[in-house]
Image (cartoon, rainbow, N blue to C red):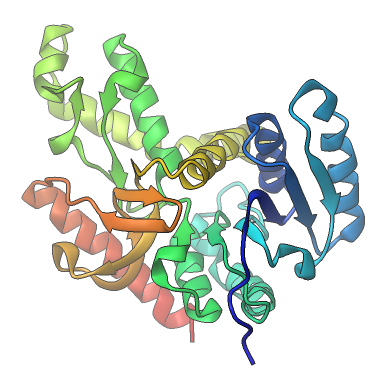
Length: 320
């Protein structure tokens, strides 16, 4: 029988999975000062112990923190439970190619979390993140606001970085989102993009760029293929996503109510129902508070619906 929800320790985080992404994220969180306790869990207990020791040796250069390898009983009071466990994406493999392997892995992880009555937020980072966030939501019994995928937070950062370089401006002044699937059907929402309130097309012309369609297509394609390029060169991506994980944790722990394009359940927005994908949402200490309906042109809305149908087709085959 499912236990009552435990009281959470706002200063505690749990990391399930200590591969490249999990260990890089744990290292990032150690430096962040957000938490005073972090438990690392991995199917290979020795790996978790080794990462805890290695990262822990850096604590004298950061803020005081207890870092240790543990098991599922140690996650009960964690404010955020981060899941990075799963098979890695190989060169030439799409995120959706990982579906069956990682849905199977989640089939063993999520019930262990569910039966312990955890009261924290579940943050899914493993790929394909939209499918696995849906899987985690269905298997955990958690309310929808408490199950979040890292979604297109990193893709959006890549887009802002690319636009900042293209326009020779600080990327933090660029306001734009990647929406939809974290993967090949993602959409760069250029119609609502702006630079400090100035429409993107207008700002581009201010900076001497007039081939809007051609430049937009190229930038969107480069962003979509960023992970493939990195994987082809170094076989894995982990630093960028680690920073994205840290940012999501910041927003939750500090109750910032920031707007992030995280993966969460859709309920009729843009005609999309019963699928998890990335749309801008207000995120705070209780997880996802509400979606933010950014304006999308007709082409972007249609692409978003296609993205949703792509994910639904995969879900029907993979999630029983």
